Amino acid sequence: MARQTSIQCPNCGRQFSAIVETVIDAAADPNAKVRLLSGQVNMAQCPNCGFAVGMSSPLLYHDASKELLLTFVPMELNLSKDQQEKAIGDMMRELTSRLPQEAMRGYLFQPRQMLTLQGMIDTILQGDGVTPEMMEQQRQRVRLLETLLQSPEEDLTAQIQQHDEQIDAQLFQTLGVMAQRMAQEGRADIAEQMVVLQEYLLADSTFGQSLIAQSRQQEETVRQVTADLEAMPENATRAEFFELALRYAGDDEKLQALVGVARPAFDYQFFQDLTMRIGQAPASDREGLESLRDRLVELTTAVDQQAQMALANAAQLLGAIVNAPDPDPLIAESLPMLDDTFLAVLQANLQEAERQKDLQMSGKLRDIYNRVLTALRQNMRPELKFINDLLGAPSEAEARQMIAEQAGAYGEALLEMMDAVEEVLAARGDEAVRGRLAMLREAAAQVLS
Image 1: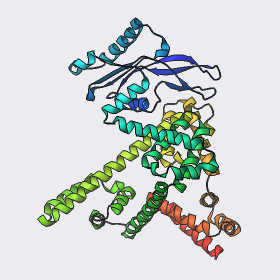
Image 2: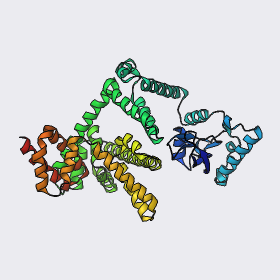
Image 3: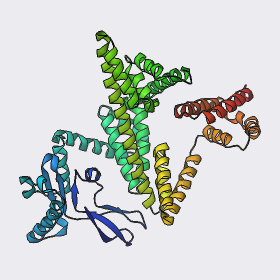
Image 4: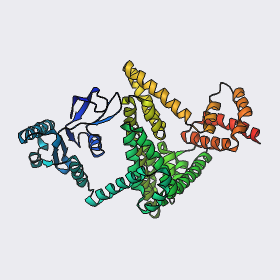
């Protein structure tokens, strides 16, 4: 529930239109709650200079599931008591006009007035089970990150080692959220500092080193699972795939990898067949099969939720790039997030804009698409860029000529990168490109030998 208003940028003086949210109903718009908790409600970006502008406005928050009704009137508005009551009354009427009669409860007639926006956020978090102690820990994480960001780069390693015990998964998560928020607000300089800090945290903290080791172990597990899948016959039956899942039942890491690599295979029919097999199995085997089914349901649900979250994050990033006065800095700072999911969201929006015959939006999205591809190509590792050029060569003869002339400049690193790309293509099931890459790798190996 929002209204449009005209504001003036305090940085450049430009007048522009912005959306002011006044009523947030968590049930009707869960994303609005996320925006509020992340500090993005009533924030606008100047289309001229990119400056982030905060807009003061009365705000009402409602969560029927917790019977929570909160109001906040900023002190800087200098409203009299009567004016505050009128503002709150207007927001209440806007909320209740959208609620069904059976949803009316006593708490709706006694809104709790918050003195500060942070107080409103803290109350919402407490309603979600976040204790004051947990909030204080989060504030400590933010303070530590601010200290590290203000430290000279040559002192970072020592600072990280000094605070090693405080560096954990929650700190990395907080840093990631802060970096994304800065990028969306056009603060490319701060977002870049956060990326550099993350690299130092990974290299110099105990937890960062454990993340690197865990990532390597996961890569090896995925490689093993992929090899097992490739070893299956091309016309493998559901029963054979089921036997592979059953073989992994005692190895949760491989089971997770299998779901991640072959999620489409775990469809309704798979679980129906598994349930039927449980019913037909001897009583001594049923408990193990039921545990396997329950774990597969958990894993597939988690993969689906991660995919939905990735789509939402990609859509949010695309919106920020579209609205940025100069998209190139934001694209450059967001390179790690410009993955296949982002490109799929971008292409889907472009196709929809073309279907709607929205020439202005389709033109803007096509321009962004070209800018993104250019940025990705420019930031490829040299070996990967060369592989991309090889795959894009007009003919096999020209690709072989390129290998003969240039492969020596890359050495064994080229073969290693080809192997890595081949694994990605295998996971995607892109056999045509994979076959061509195998031919090119053989030619490169002959040249390098």
